[in-house]
Amino acid sequence: MIAQSIWNNHYNLLIIFLAVVNLYFLYMAFQKIRLLKKELYTGESVLEKLISKRLGKPDAAERLGKDDFHRWEELYREATRWFHLFSGTISVFPLLGVGGTVLGIIPAVINFENVQSSFALALVSTLLGVLFAIFFKFFESYLSGNYTLVSERINTLTVDVARFLFDKDPT
Image (cartoon, rainbow, N blue to C red; front, side, top):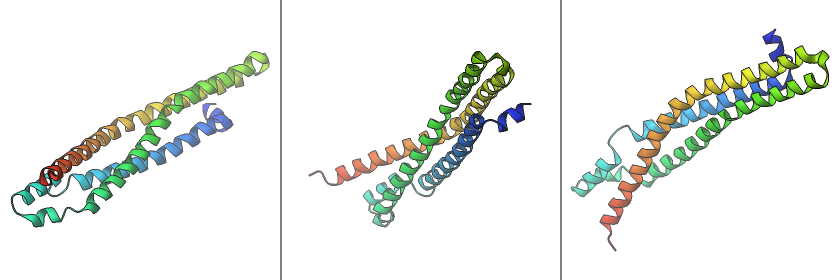
């Protein structure tokens, strides 16, 4: 009965379609954040390279070029875009559930002969909206921790490099 209510209603199919789209957003956000995290946390740190240059080992700092920062900035932008698309879409699911409830109750109030099918739409839409919101919230909590870690690392690197450049050229 529930499966039939899910697949025989266009509104519920819209909720399911949005869940599939949000899975794609999740996948892209996960990939971009993972790649950026790998780039930022492997090998010698940027600060270590800058210190090496200060101590007279310029070859270590020369490996750190503008290309690294440009690549990290672009990856960070992409990760931010996909993460916000994913997390923003999560908030739509409960609203779609409430919308399904309203769409299901209105025909029941107008014509009492359709009460059973109307309430089936109302309850199944609400159930889908809540279940998808809960499901995606678990993934959002995991991703938000990694996204915050990467954001803080980018901010720290930016400040460290700015200080280094400012101390290097005080004019």
